[in-house]
Every structure is written in C-alpha cells, then in structure tokens.
Length: 213
Image (cartoon, rainbow, N blue to C red; front, side, top):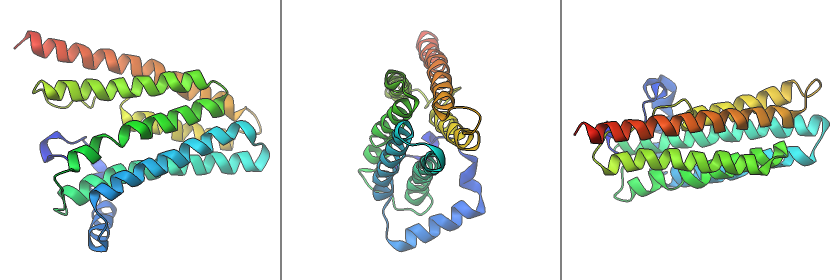
C-alpha cells in the first residue's frame, strides 16, 4: 500500500499475532486493496451504531456502544493488515497508494459524524471530521514537498480512534451514572482541541523545514 520508509510507525506490526494473521490473509487470496475498502465498511457501521445511541436506551444502548467500539477497532485492524499484506507478504499493487489513502478520509468522517449525532451535537462531529481531514492533508502536503511523512499527534488517526473507542467503552460501562451522550461529547471536544494542536504542529514543522531549506 505504501513504501516501507513512509509508513505510520506501529508497534503492532512486530507482534506474533499480527504476522500470523497476515500470513493467513495472504494465503486466503484477499488483496490489500480489498482490505482497505473493507475499512470503510467497518467505519460506516461504526458511524451508524454511534448515531443510534441517540435513539436507543438501556441495555440496547449499551450493546450499541460496545458494537460501535468494536467496529472502530475493526477499521484499525483493516488499516493495519492492508499494509502488512502489501509489504510483508509482498502483494502490493500499483493502485496501492490510492487505496492506502483515499478510504481513510470517508472512514474518519463516517465515524466522527456518527459520534456527533449520537452525542446530540452533529456540528461537533462535523468539526472533528473536518479537522481530521485537514490533519491528513498536512501530512500529504508535506510529503508532496519531499518532506518525510509527519504522523505526529496529539490527535493523529490512531489517537482519534482510541478516543472514540474509550468513549464507547466508558459510555457503556457508566451508562447507569452518566449519559453516554455526554461521554461522547467529551471525546469529540478532546479530538477537536487536540486536532487543532496537531494541525498547528504539523503546519509549523512544514514551514520550518521549508525555511531551513
């Protein structure tokens, strides 16, 4: 999906379970591009489940939150294995760079907008989604200038997905004491504020590298 020197640093790539799963996926005939496409499906389901928090209650709401969090993690697993099957298993395709980048943008939007709807503040979900896309744009823009890919946070993709997953878990576990919508709102505010910091840091680093030649 992308070259070895320009990949998001992930310690999970070096784990035994990830390598074993990569071998099984490669042997199954599933292509890296298909895994990338599947990540959008997982994100769409996660977004729908988060949005459903606004119209569910009781045990059904708890189950919905847990399922949403699991779908977010499924999206991340797709993001992990598309690159591993492409690079480690040697199944990279010429269209890999397209599938490596493009599906991530609607996936972010679908999840964050769903969280916003579930939290009762759709506008905040849109804000988080817009910032997420801008963060990715800055990384791509830096790369277009010949700079190394900047995956720094504090609200890079893995951090945003961790925030909504934790919010889903806390919302489910604490539903008897605090409104899940409130927990989701807090997560979105953390993503928005952290995303603005991330955007500023990446932009400053791009400008500094240009200024320094």
